[in-house]
Length: 416
Image 1 (cartoon, one colour):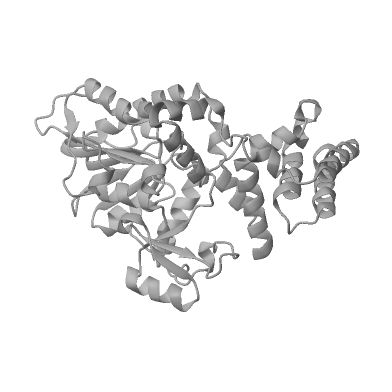
Image 2 (image 1 turned 30 degrees about the horizontal axis):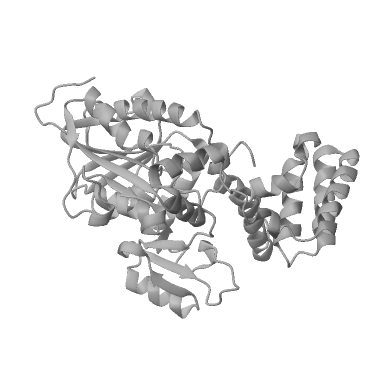
């Protein structure tokens, strides 16, 4: 859980062959361990443990402390088998003894109640910016199970609601009217998997948080405009822009994410050409596009409820490196925008150096661009004084997201 592929991608690959019951357990275990990792590590002495056993011990401890439906003997025996596969027979004795000691000690709730579930350096940043109360609310949001939100595609909202309700699912309106929330009809049932829902195979909907749907609305790309979506996977914004009448080309350089992009476009039947391209390598002619959307790779601090691994993957120095890459991507994206065209820069970050400060520095480098927020394209409470979109989970009850809409002067004149 400490490296490699992002949580969602690694999890989805790993559970493909499991039954629905086992898949739900795997989802709960993986996300729960990531959210509770710091508390779990406090109950385990990992300093002297083989690094190959760290996640196995965390999984076992999580089951012992948090999952009453898993008997202690089952949690221990499963962990022992995993240890045998990962590190050989000597490792089984260590894991068996460590977890049996935890089982004998009883519930770990008293140990985890006040243990931070995020890195302290990140909490300190948020306290300085938001204050202690908002930071506490943000952490609580990140530690809850996220809602499943659908955006209609081939079916309209009314048809999708009727089908879901008829199939026995609970359906509600997402915040700001941006989609439908879906749940089981009982509080004890886990959230449904999208593939279980009516209309999935027909491309009736995509799964997308309201914040990301609102970014696509905020972009306010006119009908018929040519749009280059430079980091398009998993495809939700590209699909939304195409449904609104834009002529979208979707690109991404990451092989694993390209597969998700192709699947989403094929399932929904939206006419979007897909290209494997690196924005930094001048993938198209300069000044060719009416609009370029750059949903830049970022720290993902606004989506830590959905991606609990992000809190542990991020390091204090990582924000500076991300900001440097974002600046390079912005410069490359700017070269593709025709005079009079629009550049939409977006992240799922809460951090100023990836958002407003990034845009400020871009405008200094590129005086031929200026902010151009589209009036009425997003709820007023989500707009900053500069007219940028900023969704904050602790205030707006949706994922965190940022977007700035920048227009290139028709007269041209380069700032690069």
